[in-house]
Image (cartoon, rainbow, N blue to C red; front, side, top):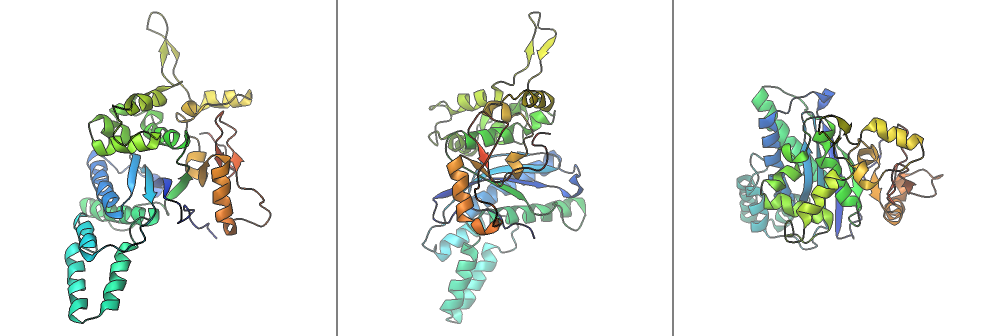
Length: 338
C-alpha cells in the first residue's frame, strides 16, 4: 500500500513542496515549444490555485517545481471571484462560461444549497499542492496529445513531492538544486543559459520569477536587486563548484563537483556543504518525504504518525552527506548520490 502524500498541517500558514514528475518510459519528448507551453500552463494554474512557484526546471523528460502553498482562507470566495479565476485558465474542463451557466441554473431553480456545494467544489481545487499538480499535468497532457496526435497518459505514475522547511538554508538550497539540473545534465555550464528554469527567467527580467527566488532566500519579495537577492543566489549556485584552470588558462585543474568526487569525500568521512550538495543528484531532495531541521521533520512525523509503523519512534534521519544540519523523514535504502 503506497503512503498517503505528506502535506503541511492545515493550521500552518504555508507549506513548501519540491514536486517532480517524469514522462512515461522517461522518453525525451519535451522540446523547446513543449517546454514553453508547459511553463505557460504552470503560470496559469499557479494564479488559479493561489500558489507561488518559487523556482522550476523543465527538462526533456521530467520537470521540477518548488511551490509554496498558503493556508486556505476560511472565508469562501464570491461567485464572481471564482469565475474570475476560472477565466484566467485556458482550455480547462470547467470553464468560466460553463460555471456561470451552472450558477444561473441553480438561481433559476432557487436551489441555494446546490449553488453553495458547486461553489465549494471549485474552491476545494485551490490552495492544494495535489490539485495544482493534477490540473497542470492534465492540461498539459491534453495539449501535448493533440499536438502530437497521441492518446493515453503522458506522465509516469503520480508525482513525487518532498515537504521542505521554509526557514534557514533549506529552501534556498532546494531552489538552487532545482536550477542546477541542466548543469548536472551537461546541457549548459551555467544555469543562466538554460531558458527553462526559474533562475534564467528571473535574469530575463520576469518579476514573478524574481519574487519567487527572493521568497526562497527569505529576502524581501521585491529585493531581487535592492536586497542583494540576485547576487546572493548566484553565489549559492556557483559556490564551491566553479571550474578552475591553471595559470596559463589552458588546462582544467578542477572541473567542479561531481558525484564521483563526492563519493571519494564520503569514503574519507568528509562532509559536503549545502553549496556543494546542490551540484549533485542527491536523492534526498526527491525521495526524502520531508527536508529541513530536526525539529521541522519531527513535527511532520508527529502530525502524521499514522503513516509510519509502530516500531518507528522518531522521525528525523540525518543527511550524513552534509555539514549543514539537514534532516529527512526517509532513510534511503539506495545510494544517496548518483
